[in-house]
Amino acid sequence: MIYLDYNASTPIDPAVYEAMLPYLSEHYGNPSSSHAMGRAVKAVVETARGQVANLLGAKTGEIVFTASGTEANNLVIKGVAETLRHRGNHIITSAVEHPAVINPCKYLERHGFEVSYVGVDSNGRVNPKDVAGEVRPNTILVSIMHAQNEVGTIQPIREIAAIAAQGGIGMHTDAAQSCGKVPTRVDALGVDFLSIAGHKLHAPIGVGALYIREAIEIEPLLHGAGHEDGRRAGTEAVAMIVGLGVAAELAAKADHAAVTALRDRFCDGLTAAVGDQVVLLGDPDDRLPSTAAVAFPGRIGAEILAACPEICATTGAACHTESRKRSATLAAMDVPERVAFGAVRFSVGRFTTEAEVDAAIGMVVAAVRSLPSTG
Image (cartoon, rainbow, N blue to C red; front, side, top):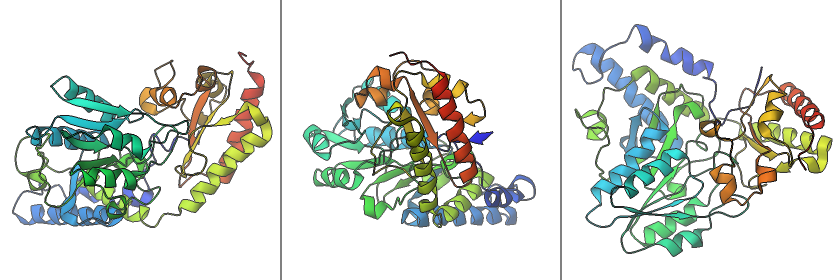
């Protein structure tokens, strides 16, 4: 199998796996317990918190561990809404967000909130001026993802965050796709909240984190005991958190240039072989190093992948793969259906090899040439 679906989930790094093992067997204490075993695991949780904080350029106390990036997004969006309901009921987001942002916003709309969904250009990029045009006196949060998960376009978060700051509005970015692939320092981005997902940066599925700027208090999503400084109830999943911490430390040293070279090798190989039968989706320059979102006009992406059973990739974001219609992202980008239905997202990563990329090019090219065009 050739795994080209790193945007969906990454393999656990061997160093992460080894670091987790003792906390799945020997060290099983509760971090909230005051005895020796509890104190020992509490210490490693705090070490991991520091590792994640270091990757983000944050303070250790600004990191809250969650069970996923989805939970982190829900915590900040619903938490801000509940906390600031007295001040306003308007939220700004984009039309190309992950469902983990869109659906909490839809939920809030059913409970008296108003949400503005700003559009994007043909590359999938949000224009900061469009965000500024949606700001109202009752706006309490702007939530724009750092990198688009389907096409890889990196959004101008710093400029958007400056607009939010001018209005005294909280700024959140979902950095699940970008963290560990491009710099995500919160001071450079200027955000108040930032979400990450462990399984996107070589940690296990089932752990995430939320950065909350110091001195900001929001209503918890989960109510219970006072875990995570009262911000997220539930006994910490020590092994998972240890894994995320080590993954964050490795990500801080990662060679993004090597991944970019693999992505470009794949895209250039397809273009050289099939020419105008392939179209690059997303921003050609400012995009994730991992992401090769392409389309084969007049063909069906699912049929191309079916003809390449050795390749693991997706016809859109993994969370949407059962849908047979044009994705919301490609619709917002105004990609014609003839092109959009032929879209496939290939994504490379740390463990992808040149040999795998070259073999995948050959398989995809053969599939494209063998399948008739629908016109």
